[in-house]
Image (tube, rainbow, N blue to C red):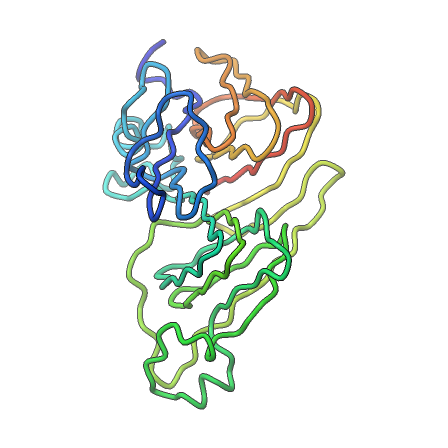
Length: 285
């Protein structure tokens, strides 16, 4: 296999916040990551390839090596640009997590226990009553929402988020960077709930704009051959399957908890399942 030729890459997840004694360490080969309390980074510039000739190399290194062949022409011309989209898995278990969001992000609720909820943004009445005050993460100033499995939450820059117990969420969006603060007289924009649009019996569009497309796909057979035009991630959720290509890496297995990256110059590929398989297909334009 030519090391300069893009092919599907399986990425090692990176445990982060509160992942017991594994914080910051790569998972051992063959060990399935548990959805423990905290954050699991699935795709970022520091992610490393799990297997193959590029095993151990960081995604940031390959982005500089392959350029547009990896991420597409929109991002390939700027070697200093970071990965256009990052993927994270969060699980709150029995705790509450507060976050200061510095850029727009999208949260897809993978699982929510009964009576699970979250708070995001500020209610107009509370924001007006506390005009000019530093509200921080005061829950009484934040709008509360019931958390339902299968819904997607879009949060604009600068909106605070308070995750309640019993939530497992997929987060996708660009790398965090400082957001311009809102004027003291201006309330932060409200969050936006998005309901997936059914495209067919096996596919739902969770979100799509000029920068990002996220689809939930469930299938029990081999998908049609298609070719990515931009950086594409395949995030397995349930079931077993593999990615088939006509390139040098003809078969790449799907592992729960590991994301498969399909470069923009990958060529045609298909997904073949063993029984029912469900995955998120995330494309960054």
